[in-house]
Image 1 (cartoon, rainbow, N blue to C red):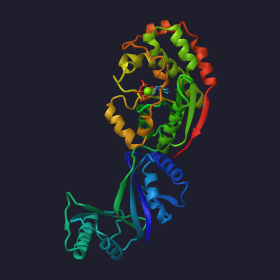
Image 2 (cartoon, helix red, strand yellow):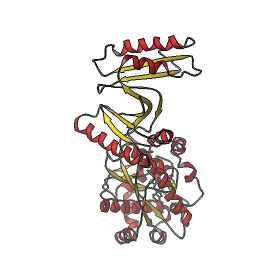
Image 3 (tube, rainbow, N blue to C red):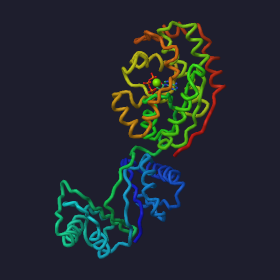
Image 4 (cartoon, rainbow, N blue to C red):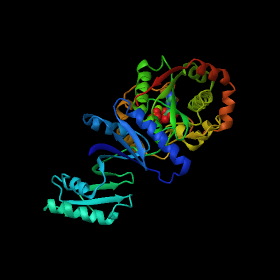
Length: 387
Ligand code: ATP
Ligand code: MG
């Protein structure tokens, strides 16, 4: 008998080659995640098993696995050669502590086993009751579940502890995109949510040094590290926005300042995407949150790029976004009080319903192409990996 971790993954509608690719990618992500631990990761019949590891590292490994997209749960299980007497012994030895009700869930994939799933569950329920006279079976609201899985490979798994994981799809299964990462609360959450649907990320951050501080940049690097625990290695493009902002400030209407800044950020983002083979732009915008996040504002910023723009938190309330930020542990960093480039030269009355026509008219005062080219040419690139 040996201790193993039994990993469960979702999205069972995936079939054929897709399913194979999905599992292959998931396995590779799991191996990367567990790189620091000596262990073996294998797959049989829709289950991934982690074995041959140091028991002392088990809790730490489980916490790491909770950050792997595509996994639904980790079961802390024992594995042994299938035999009814051994199953009875293992289930009979389960520690029920102080609980008063339980349920056995049995799954017999191996049709050669003499009892079907229902019969086995009922039989094992009896075994438990014989040993623990104070317990009762509760099929609808049990205080404790015990799971028994008889696989076709001759192995049985028994577990009573399931830890839920992040869910979603394996990182990389949806391709690669570029996250506009500010120092705020929303964009790290947006990155987390879209990576959870399988999009691998690079990130771009715009700073306005010396109007913004060195600490503001450090804060964004810290945020990139924090989401990298989920999103894998992130190439972080750090782009100076100072010259662009000064020029907009000098040459354009102040009420259109943010609109034009956003349009230039999008153009730079698209250029970085083209150079790095990235297929989408991701932002942390939420409808109606501020003047630059109205439908009309988003239309005016979208119109300068041809790539899809994903806005995972578009329909989320701030409270909902904050709850996720706390869960993924970016919140404390996000609320550190350093300024963002968007708060420098902030106009008193930003336009709420900008038009493309007016934005294009004002942009005639700028040499957009060379501003964009120069900003990208002078970018600083960091590779961040806390996966
Ligand atoms: P966040 O909390 O993500 O900063 P926010 O509510 O402060 O968002 P804005 O400042 O209007 O909203 O920014 C909207 C989005 O534009 C951000 O979510 C982010 O994707 C992008 N963005 C804003 N500032 C920057 C920046 N300095 N660098 C990179 N992206 C930025
Ligand atoms: Mg912001």
